[in-house]
Image (tube, rainbow, N blue to C red; front, top):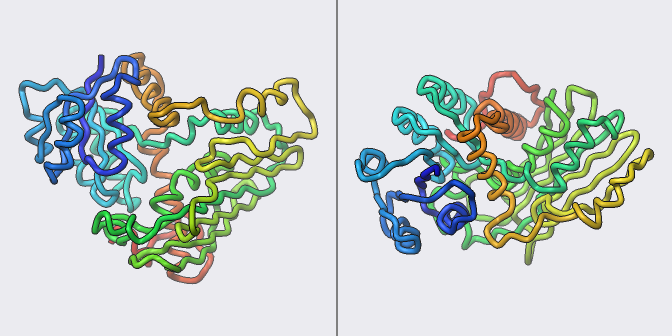
Length: 353
């Protein structure tokens, strides 16, 4: 049995605490929670009859607690400092997306965890969606042939009350905009499917929300394999969410996975069909129903398997860093109004600064 402790008890902590606290993850349990605002921690602690803290060091030094894994769910801009401070305790660490706001911070997190000989897991739960797993398998089997175009669309609704929940939301120093927060999972999926990006050209605007960063952006990408890509992201959809989707077009096939969060097959069409293709709509079209969040559940199962059975960590710090690099490149292009090549020095991006 692995004992988990949460640091940060904001909105996303409810998903994590429900899974760990309500015995949804085999061989894992929630033993403590921490938040600088003790009242936030108390809400979760009272629900699961576990201790709560306002100081993470006090929690980690509590001799009555046995903690195996620390889950960092604090504001995005705090992830790097928290992981750096927590690594010295020698506990494996899970960090929510994005792992950091700057590439330098991502490198520091990776280095500190390596020095402490611990695993760093980055939450990318959409990679475990059933339709996404099937899409990646089709790509790995080269069923698409030459890749032509990849597109992600995030058309969500986040009104001003959402941004007003916390002062850090929408700020450059602690959060970023729709690209960093809402779209980071989809950007990760696009890069995971198509491979390394060569260059980006992007536009961003703050259309409706009263925040520092962008609430709407469009990005053109050139991949190193010759394919092109498009990112369309906004939280200015009204009055409700529309979609979170990914499309993959190749010379031998087309797939579109939509739904709210890349969790539903819309198109599955290949020039060379396979018998299993018929099952994509009857069996694998959607994630199985799970009141606690299917993607996060399968992600936690993966984490437990990695730690308990010495399985390979599929989304470690180096893997999580890739989308941080790409998002910073996109912001660099927005600020300079020029095409930006990945690997060049980031000078103008405001993210994390």
